[in-house]
Length: 177
Image (cartoon, rainbow, N blue to C red; front, top):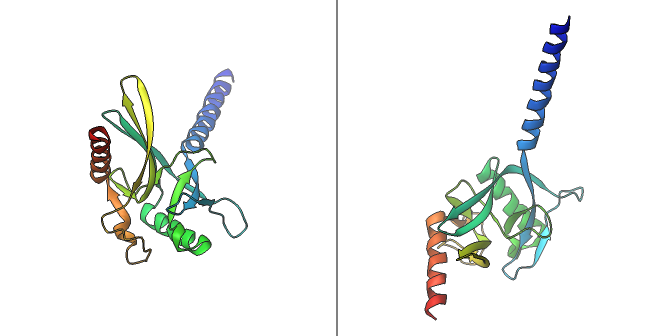
């Protein structure tokens, strides 16, 4: 009888632990939409509730440069949906959705994967010696022409290498000035 109780306790512990770990590992974020002048508005559903997106927060780090981004579940369809909803709810100038957990969240981008990011503004942290600094960058694809259209949506993604090149060029120009 004692062995059965121990076995049952272990099984219950294992089941509860599995449920807890799975629910804990589910990541989500809220969404806001912004224009090019940094005006922004929370994206809400038809009932006035904050839109919640499931996915995974990621952090890129190389050579003292780092930033965060969010890869939603079903990323291409989800980012397209969010961009369209931003435009429909707030107008053509609010085409860019951003992930955010709260009002003080940093500027982060949505991404398809670890190499393709949706255009927008991003907070880049960089280290010089023991100090860490933050700089805001507006990142757009080479095809961006300040005109939103469904046809241009797929051209609105930028690669990690392009982001890093733009960051390095910006730092070189600032250091050389």
